[in-house]
Image (cartoon, rainbow, N blue to C red; front, side, top):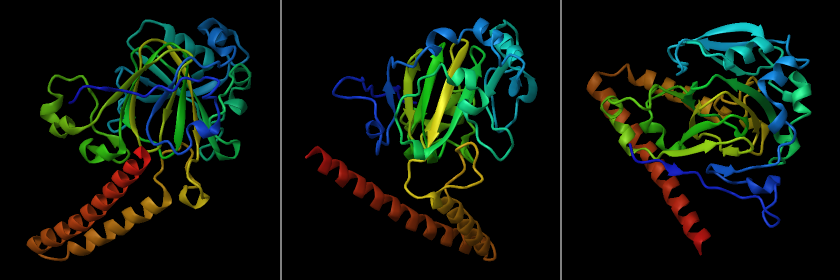
Amino acid sequence: MNASLPVETINITATTPLSPSLLSGRRSPALLPSLPLGPCLTTWTPDHLIASSLSSKLVSVHSSSSPRLNFISKNFTYERISFAQLVANCCSSSNTFWYLRSLGDTSHSRSDLATHFPSLAAELDIPPLFSPETFFSSVFRISSPSLELWTHYDTLDNVLIQVRGSKRVVLFPPRDADKLYLVGDKTSVVDWEADDLLEKYPKLREVTKYEVILQPGDVLFIPALWFHSITAIDFSISVNLFWKNLDGEQFYDKKDTYGNRDLIPAQLAFKTFEKATAQLKQLPPDYEDFYLRRMIINIQKRLDTLKSEEDNQNSDDRE
């Protein structure tokens, strides 16, 4: 795999203020370092969280004997424990790794920090990086040291706000989707540090990899469809803010509570493709092979057109 590239840094100044226009239309990650996030940067200590009014609140968490959570093989269990016990578990030196991704009150509702963790929400100054009417969810995350979340993509723009501890984030652009050994919206690659990584997954030699270390106060913009893997270097607390970046509610699945369901036109296209390939299975194998290759040619033509349009746009922007 090629060496990691740095994520572009945007420093907030008087001439580059925080506003929804800062990230509007941007399709590559960006690091916004050392933002003023409010009292949370000093108050969100383990002792403060354990002693808070949320201490007895029950939360659903991931528990695993492995630091690398794998959603495909499900090498973790879901447990329901008190918020105070979760924080204590994450801070203890044991062979069990814990991870909280806050949820809504029901399976059909979204996570909202202000609703589900109101006392903590009051201590976080959310940076104004999107229009309030496009808000989708706010997700509270707590991780044991060394815990690594599976590589995946979301279908909404989001920012990862690092409040306590540090995190390593590795990102891959959407254009590398065909080289990341996908199973649904997640990659089957689990251990990115394995000695035989490129032997098992040779296409990874061709991917473009970005990497950034987040410190408390840092905010990382992760555009929709960008693959990302996140590792908590130490005891970590962060908040994700998701928003709908496309104009038009018709693009978004109303049943989506996590921000990762494929957009409606994509879902319909996948169903059409499944029907088309099912039709071709009626033919002898050599005929099926031929027409599948015809389909690939048509898809490649469309990809080439998109690439040409993008190159022309980039050329116009430079001029």
